[in-house]
Amino acid sequence: RRFTMYKRPASNKVVTADKGESSPLYYLCVEPKISGYLYKNNRRGKWQKRWCEIRGPFLMYWPTKPKTKPGQAPKAPDAAIDIRRTSPTVKVMGRQEICLTSSSRVTKIKVDDATPAQGWLDVLAAIPRDAPVESKYKYRAKTLSKDSTG
Image 1 (cartoon, one colour):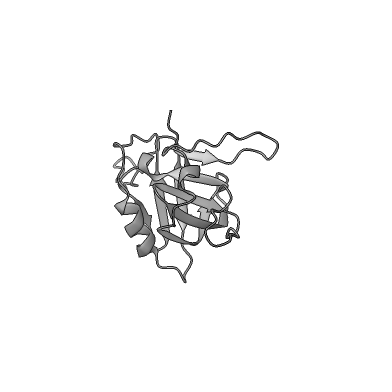
Image 2 (cartoon, one colour):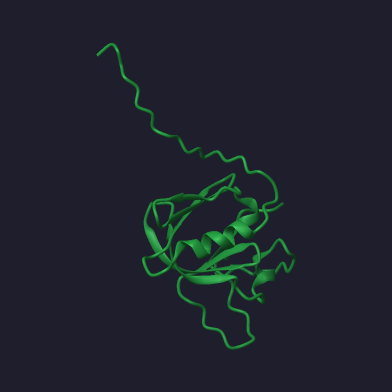
């Protein structure tokens, strides 16, 4: 089974590293296509600054930039989003906010003023998607209708 979101387990759990192409750990030795600090919206609606990298088909993020030696892969990310499992239509809200929609969640990321969003959008658009994603989250446009009774 393939998941959209991969999270690093707690430090007291034993991890068996799945090195297959469906695992984000497989792509840690690949150079990132783009990297930098972004803001990620958590489930409570709070924006959190995270170091983000797109490696292979995964958007990976850490609390801070991982410290690595040349030729060494960084530690496992806090979480990784499989972009192949998200909608091919990336929704841009305003100038800075990007929404990735999967079947189970909407991930919102935001660039700061110093980072151009277009670079991130270009890299996200270049990653092939597996299949159309049917999301339980629907964007509804507000429609204003005139009520004739009042």
